[in-house]
Image 1 (cartoon, rainbow, N blue to C red):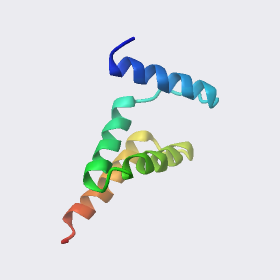
Image 2: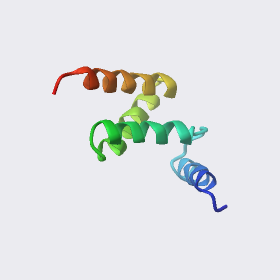
Image 3: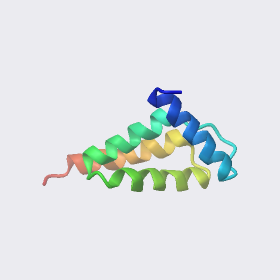
Image 4: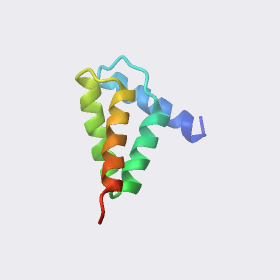
Length: 82
């Protein structure tokens, strides 16, 4: 277990179990989301955005729908003149 993807999958599984969650985590999708937020806004937007998406998913949104919603916000912000 040395490559990053394996380490992260193991970490997500361990933390999920400890939190009493029974779910599969799309680690790549979550990391892509964090990267998009960090680069388009500011670095601290990454954990904040993933937290907000997690709350949305916890309330019933699909991960795909929540990520698409963030994408719409990022697109709107990118289209606004500075």
